[in-house]
Length: 131
Image (cartoon, rainbow, N blue to C red; front, side, top):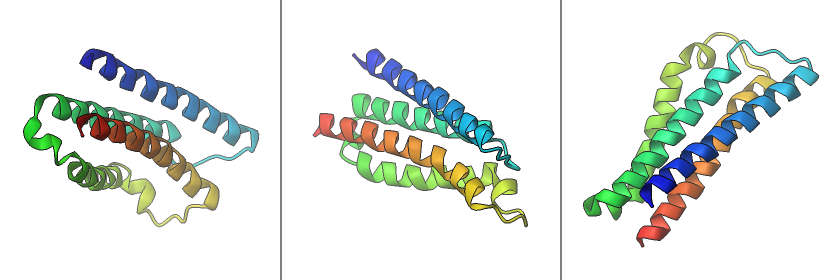
């Protein structure tokens, strides 16, 4: 059962990556918008981070009764860590002197929110299963 859930996370996150990235780039191409950053890297970071978080929480919930009551608090700390790592990895894009346009800022936020919504759904299911 655990293997099935882990494979499900991988498949859903891969589908979100493929659909989100290709729809996003197609829309940007049709509007002739170019960004000073790699949209692919943003989507890859978010997909990998979300997969690590979902798999990690599933494993903690399955094998550690000691931490299963604290998963909600651990998730909040994980979000802070994810934001920090994102800022470190993409510091040149985020903190350069270049002011990002609304389209560029939105393109940074879209993948973040896509994966954040999925993380919340997945973590909620894990928490409800353990309650």
